[in-house]
Image (cartoon, rainbow, N blue to C red; front, side, top):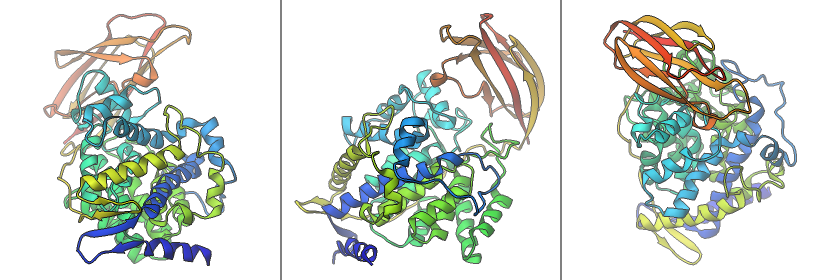
Amino acid sequence: MKHCIAIAFCLLSIQLLAQPGQVKMSMEVLQDKIKGGWAGQTIGVSLGAPYEFRYNGSFIQDYVTLTWHRGYVKEIMINEPGIYDDLYMDLTFVEVFEKYGLDAPVDSFANAFARADYMLWHANQAARYNILQGMKAPASGYWKNNPHADDIDYQIESDFSGLMSPGMPQTAAKISDKIGHIMNYGDGWYGGVYVGTMYSLAFVSNDVKYIVTEGLRSIPEGARFRTMISDVINWHERFPDDWHYTWMEIQKKWSAENSCPDGIYHAFNIDAPLNAAYVVLGLLYGNGDLGRSMEITTRAGQDADCNPSTVGGILGTMLGYKNISPYWMQGLEGAENIDFKYTTMSLDKVYQIGLKHAVRNIVKQGGKENASDVLINTEKVVPVKLEQGFTDLGKPRELKLNSWDKNEVSFSFEGNAVVIKGSVGKKKNDIAERDIKIRLTLDGKTEILVMPTYFQSRKHDVYWNYDLPNGKHEVKLEVMDPHPDYRLDVSTAFVYKK
């Protein structure tokens, strides 16, 4: 009963004014929703942490009890801080806004995460490498420069864009246009646009289905991302009582990976649209229940910590911090005043800074700040531009190279695009990190590849080229300065042929 009264009070505190397109919200409610968004995503990622990529192409059975107990978040923050990559990336961008203001240039965001000490993967790491090698955004996220451009990266770190744009989805999308293209493009970028839009709508609506469906209007017709999420919405209407049916339909139609080199020919799938489908699965079938929604999305598998983090953040924003149940809040006990590793930001700090940024953004977009409330000029959801990567490549074929600790690798293939997977490394832990230079010769043309052994600045894939003429090609890789303490491993090539 108290829970229902609290929700009613929260909703009554958001007053629709006579003038169309404006919402008056008390400062207390605005703060409560921002806190709910940050707390919700932290709860969600912590809930799913033990299951991340352990259930690929399968779901967690109902009889498996998901771990949760008092002080659980603090335990993970201390013992496994790398789990919070979606949070520390989020907070990196919040810190840039705090330091340089709402109009901070894109290079400030790009350099902040590229030079940070934390570990990154996939589109983030590929973009980090590009930036450290001198490439500027948005080229760093463009699909021909980043084989992971469709991956989930910006989708899981875009929460800040909606949390600082209450009721202003176009404003959130503009932030995502600048920052999301640092590491993603096309469907990978759309994931962040969609998530930011749903956060923005969660400030002014308590209808989950509306947030999901209206939010999808931010993605243009013709985008694979929009088609996939539309399918999930339709399957929910067809099978409203059991999420497993919709999960199966998602697998049958959308689970094949065609771009991320780590997912091709594997059950592993870090594709943004597929994982966004699991987010929507949880939101629709959870029907506004925070715990049920996070549980469904966790059980759906694949990126099973970041996906419930997104769900928890959106619903935490919609419900507000005060309406998160004690069962979930017990997990946060002792954690809110701890800085996330690699940052100078704790939840307690971002609660306050998040409010400051949201109010500034409201005023910047023509709204008003008063002593006890804000007047928000709400915005309609409009589609962003259409862009699609990895188009017209054909189907990938796997070439097993299995070349371990070799200074020279040669192979031939027939097709119009190629991605070569591999890595460089040290044979002894106590020797210095270095850049391994590799001479690549493709059809008689030579270029030098720089591959750092240092994990934080590594090149995620050895080489890729999506612009080859369709036909036969010869490839040769040679380590330019071989050293017995360092190694080059080349595992696989994926060849595309129209």
